Length: 171
Image (cartoon, rainbow, N blue to C red):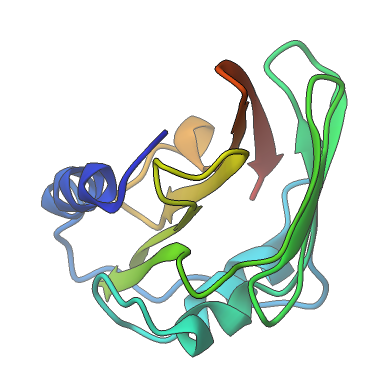
């Protein structure tokens, strides 16, 4: 399962590639799949914090994200303000509610119109079943248009078996 330290390295790598004084990201209505200015605006509005474990930091992510798996199948993630979620794809369907033992990590870095948002919820490795969810996105003038995707990775480990799924949402 992914751990918060993985995201610290990813965040550092993404931030190192995003250094410019370009204009702010665009805004607009709605959330969800497709090339969506509203989704970008929603992400831009998230609090600018680094590696926060505060559950309220990620409330800005509440909503439904619709995308496609790498194989082209439909997938969705519905996030509630308390961090609970429903994830549905052909390989994994999961409903999750964080517990006091849940490991949380939320980061939003913004600079020169570039934005990097990372969110991780993970059960401790000792949990059985154990779930994890990673959300990552980087967008702005210094990111290639083709790379502007919100990536969701969900995983469940139970009884020694591991099931995972990736969902890509166009932004």
